[in-house]
Length: 286
Image 1 (tube, rainbow, N blue to C red):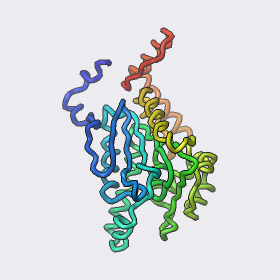
Image 2 (image 1 turned 45 degrees about the vertical axis):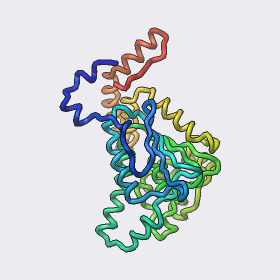
Image 3 (image 1 turned 180 degrees about the horizontal axis):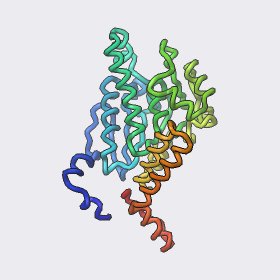
Image 4 (image 1 turned 90 degrees about the vertical axis):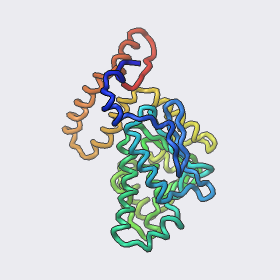
């Protein structure tokens, strides 16, 4: 390990670096092993719906990940045979119909802040999607960086089925960039379920796995990412997100600056010396 830790003022490090392996999750399962964190939505008897509490905890946890030194990649999964059925009908939808505009806006901003936190945390997020992936569950899958699915998975942006617009939690901005404008329009206007094989053809899923293997394959992919140059991977994620609103000229200049920063890292030097020595580089994320 380099002396990068020793070079940082302790007061600066204290406010910007933290260990999250020991985090005690209250509303889902959290496990960290080998730099890979696995978040498991854990209400299988209800197909893992979200509640006000789990929304808020997920938002806050993804926000903390930008400071984590022991988490290099994240896997997002659901317990049992389903990913996530969206907001709990009894614990979220029922209470929402009784709220006024200020409180409703509080809720919709909270859900949107979860997506913002997922997109701005530096760790790549791999979603392991089996069975039902609906509503906010589909949004969380969409907001992940990579998606592994199964043939039996059913992904539905079903907001219009409950009388709401498809423009929820960034769907109208992000989904067209994944599957194309026309296909996104179909999913958001109809709320129909996207099957696993169709989702792979459309590019929503990176690949399909057997149901019993999807979590393991997602974790294996996350381990590969965690073993890579994680500082540089974080820059890649940042640029993939920020360049949506740039011109080509702006993007090329931003990438020139970003790549120059990456060339200052120890990982870049390690890769060069490993190549010269005909060895595989061992990246350390600094």
